[in-house]
Length: 340
Image (cartoon, rainbow, N blue to C red; front, side, top):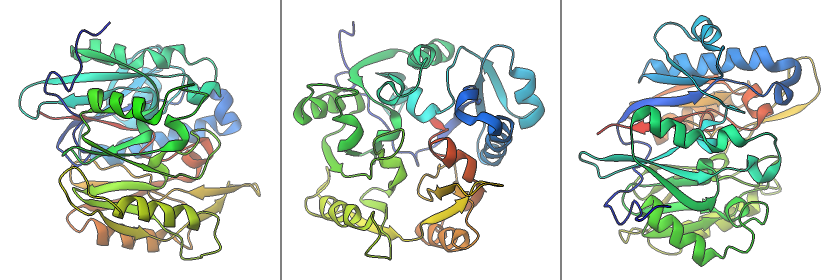
């Protein structure tokens, strides 16, 4: 049992745009999730890993025995570590990192139960954060909350944004109140101000924030806002704009919302299964933006918009259709390890 917390020890979760030492990923391993698309999913993960490698080093975790396959598809520049894993959504099942911004770094582990016991087994993934802490020889804090990393964004200056749907869900934290959850997030991620948004419930995450928003800079948030007011997501966007702008962040700023309108929808190759492309589920490597693509009608609009939002970063599109079919996008399959 922890005798202290990251906050008490002067640690906090840095923003995603803070300099990274490397990017942590995990190799596809749950064949039942991907079915006949299993090998294609591996190819897309490899494409994402190689795109990130152009900006920062990549550490790929894989099941024992899979290292040769990872090396073959990802190339020799990728670092590989064989560890027991159940699935490949590192943002959710992996570690969260906290630092003092100077010389100390540690791992925070949330309890992981397969997104509300939707996927079994998940025991190896529940232990992944602890295994990474041992691998990197970092201190480990165990947060008393069942949750996933894709539920949180921080500005590195005391403000955290999250969604109600997954954190305050009886399939993860029965009986936990908003106040109790906020106290845990303050203690373990170093948040001073917590802003709660609404996310459209999805198949797996019950509405993670990394499907609808992303911090761009302190006081600036990109938000999915459909042009079509009849779209089922529009009312969620209106409520979220109100939540983001109705009260100041931890530093007294009114948050500037950058609307991102395109909603990509495509079909899985050879099927009539519609797949949404979550353009805001992007990853911010050092100097870059890794964004999912897949809808020829809207990809260029989304790329252009993100280049406007991130004028000092190189925006790169990667295949997003299969990642979305599996349950996410580039942000969901990555986790930054902050540089000291």
